[in-house]
Image (cartoon, rainbow, N blue to C red; front, side, top):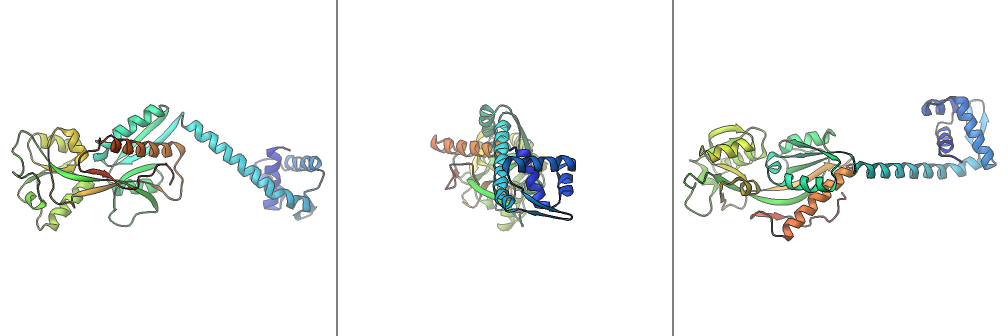
Length: 317
């Protein structure tokens, strides 16, 4: 008994038609019929009642069909598992992340992943959370780090909150501090020249919304930059910027924390609900979670950044 014979048998049982089954299987109809006959001889029983225009399972065929389907399903599962193991030696994983995380968290995670799986090609897509969610929903990403909650309706995604990060005001060490106090308030930004990110950045929307909620429109000294450009403009003394604490810790800029605890953001990892991430993406998710737990255990998290319980111990879900 061979797998090919069981596949032929199951397809004929599903279609109740030898010619149609042969078309589905892309084989000649006489070859398919011969294989079914060979299987019947090996089993010592006919599997089909054959009448012109009417193919029906015999009692022996009815008994064999669920067993054949289970064998074929188990074979397909084994094939996928072996392929997924092979994918960890080669293949690719596609990760989306906001530019602020690409400048802070993502490099350390990718370095750790690359050390463990050097054969996996890493593809990173930088963008705002709304853009990343659309790209993820279109199947063009395997995983995405996004800022939650999202504005507006999101497609069916499975999201896990990872950490909450405080935002700070970055200023040039060569310039006077934005306030003389240890902490700054949103109201203190009213008369300050802000270096502002381009449209589409989560940080732009967050900052402008916070200023409007405080009753004023922010004033921009420079507008439209990417993360590296914004940090460079601040370093040159062109203004101040609201940036994540993890970015500020690596920037060499002065970081002034907010007195308002609402000036923080939640970072989540997301994937599509309807499609299980490939093995390489699940391993990347595992490495991400292990990196965060290690950083917490080693007290390496940037001040003002905390993991959100529970941080899962597995890459499932």
